[in-house]
Length: 280
Image (cartoon, rainbow, N blue to C red; front, top):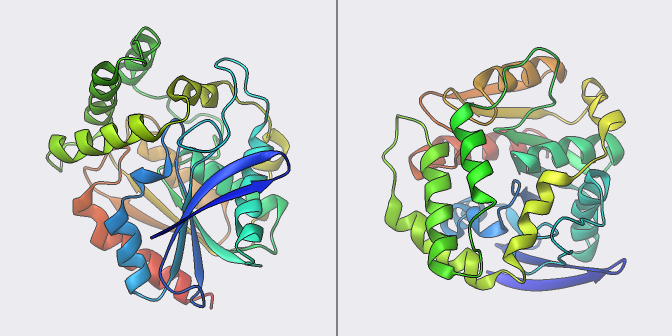
């Protein structure tokens, strides 16, 4: 992998790339409060090994990218969607295949509406356009995030334990929890964060309402990937999203939660490769 810090429009975005820069570009956008490392190295490399130039990056307020005072995000969801375009421009890339997880999926949809010429395809993982009448997140998730506000994030052990507990709550029943792997990533997350407490700014973000109302206008071929046991965005969100975007294809992961479980990687990677190949 190659790390590159992009400085543009008064902010810094930490990025990493895998593979041949001359191959079709795939931009990976992670979800709320999580840095790019949750697109794991091996996942990225396996995409690259199948002929893709893979770029991942830290959103604002996570990892090594620009952070803001906790409770005071100085940006909107539209700004975050535009950050994806800033990353492409920083690499000299005019178009890419976007793959977004959770909040990253929402940002992918916003980018596809705001910058349709930049988005070759959209892969939307465990995300939603929040159509009316969809079920809310499960109570256990709400309770976890309410309690998380009281954790001392300056204590590395406490911060790591909280992250491990989060992924345990978000998992589905099909796959075992690989606590050793999650803990290793959680330690990396804590140690590389410029200001860990700023990650909760993602929960305060506003904007994008008018753009997300236009998802039915997305022309980029869309692949929706959703687990049947997602406790944050229940499976009905994925079904609705696939129906909202013309021609979208739905890949259902039975027994999977709000997670990128290693046991699902082969199906996901094959689907992403096939999906992006059709738009070359």
